[in-house]
Length: 136
Image 1 (cartoon, one colour):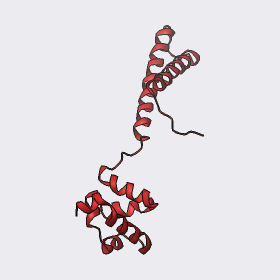
Image 2 (image 1 turned 90 degrees about the vertical axis):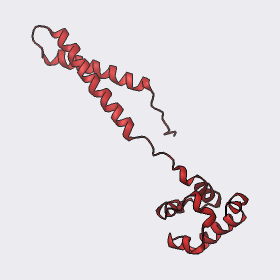
Image 3 (image 1 turned 180 degrees about the horizontal axis):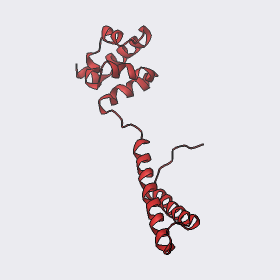
Image 4 (image 1 turned 135 degrees about the vertical axis):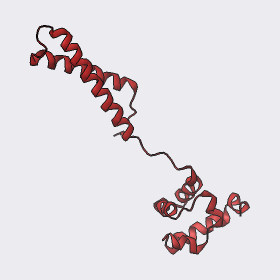
């Protein structure tokens, strides 16, 4: 099942049109508005549509995934290559960014609570990576 659903402007429009219809029907069925029911139905429909559009946009804003952290691209790539992506949060907690990779030591990795096995793999990878070696 594919849960990657992209919300488009059409979804917002459809939602607002449906809300307009709901508001207009609510106004007509409830008998609100006295002598000029058509004008009141339109007013209620517009109000319902605006509220629905606002709620739709608010929901979109809060449901967006967090942006990638640009300071950890090389770090994330290295950890994925080594199969150690579960330690990414340790790197972030210790503020071990891409620029600190060439400077990493056993004690720095120990300070961010990375166990001995993964520490050795990370240090070996850094030692063998020509790009990181030349930045030392």
